[in-house]
Image (cartoon, rainbow, N blue to C red; front, side):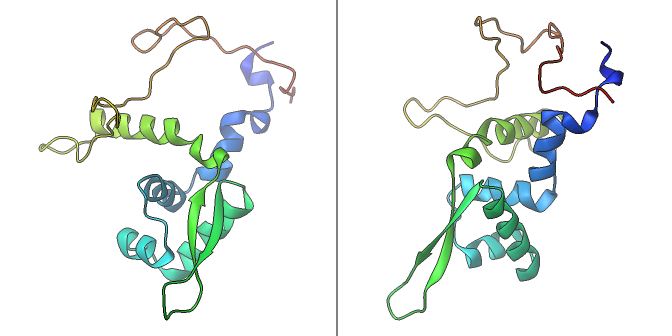
Length: 154
């Protein structure tokens, strides 16, 4: 069966992009990974309007990527912070791969703006392509796509 005979809507990439394919969603996720969790802090850091942020956070909560948790600073009304769920944390590799791409192909003359580091040893962290047998595929075009049970013919 050829790839162009398959329903592209059944593709896992298409389904994932449906969840996270918006610029603001990706930047909200980035900030959540980096510890920015409160609504006002997210709004200020991103420079995003209140309405757009409210919608994106609601979408992330509805998709099960983010959990909304109440907190109350002394003397203030209850507010909410946003915490990544396990499904949301699983996007770390995707965001790291996007950062690696941006650092390699889109960084300005000064170089990359930041680095992700392993807390234990301090080494830089990068997304890496490895097959289940442990073969490094990062520098080789040695992959093929095989339709599985979830594929649908158009």
